[in-house]
Amino acid sequence: MADLTIRRMCPSDADGLMALMNAGHLEPLRPDLPQSAAKLIRDIFLHRSKDDFRFVAICASEIIGQACLRSSQRTATLTIKVREDHRRSGIAAALLAHMIDAARYLCLWDRIDADVFDGNQAAIRLYEKFGFEIKSQGTSQDRGKILTMSKSLE
Image 1: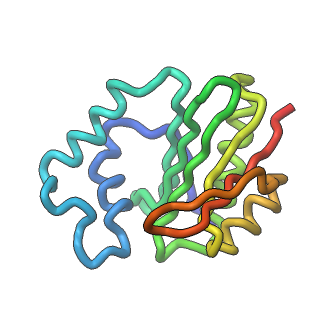
Image 2: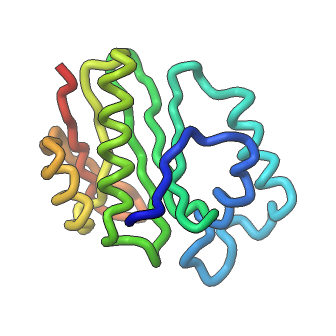
């Protein structure tokens, strides 16, 4: 994607992040919090850990993806979300490459872990392409089997 920009997330991204979180849903995820949800996202920035790194993917002035590395001792936990209408276009791969580079540059962690739903074969293949391996399996009450995939940074 030629006009893709990946940058650190900032408080002014709150409305765009709410749109990303609600994209693809017939009703907003939290219709009871339409006004305070953006404030909640802004508050995340005030109370986040110094080792919590969040980035957004922007195309045509819209947030179409986000990624986060959260620190837990010597392991970073990675989450990635891409808007449904932009999936399978390289956005997740660009975010994943960016997050791996950031993790290596920061030298805070020995490895990166990411939880993936067992049925999400596209995500599993993407993580494997970037050197992640299945480390463990668990279950979620509402979504079924979850795989924890891990990549060494050493």
